[in-house]
Image (cartoon, rainbow, N blue to C red; front, top):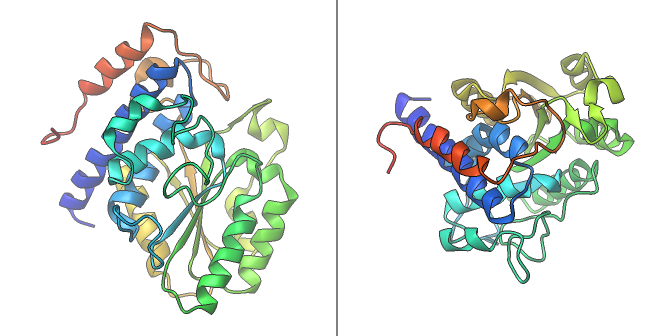
Length: 281
């Protein structure tokens, strides 16, 4: 990792936050707290780690990114716009009839949306099957499954975790957004999941736990996951702050769906613009 790498990813993460805010303003709603909190992870994946062709989203040797938490679609679309897979002009269609950017992620609508997520706890199981299939075909592609900490409640997640370790899926990286919020409240109180790092290790995974908003830490964790020599799947546990980058949203009472009033979208964009990384157009 070089300073240039950090600057490149920082610019990507900043633009992802801005694209997400603009889409949120179009509809007056969206899971913007998660999008702002997860932008550093998405920026790292698409600007630094993944191998893909923007003009050919179904290229057979592309790295696959599975959005298990389909309600993060606004964040993922922002990443696809940043990656050049979705044209910037489509941002204004978010959530509209006949748009390729529906409010929850659907593989049948959106290029590079590998699965229709949203039925939480399913993504890792699909990722295991996908990683097995790619290995069988001797395809070098990487599978990145992205999931929420609320999905740790689901038994299917842990069945998949056991299977991935059993088959030694070195081509699989699972990323967990530990923002400590789900629909019914604090995810740690709904069903306690700590000590999370020890649990994944006991299931046979190579585990890293990081501050998911510390960009060098995120980049290093992904690089470590790709280079780790062991015969194990990899998991990155990312502790993130909902609303990251917009202080008045960071400090808002945390819940699964942060309310943003009509006049606050432009305020949030102004705050973000004031922190634009150097050299970003």
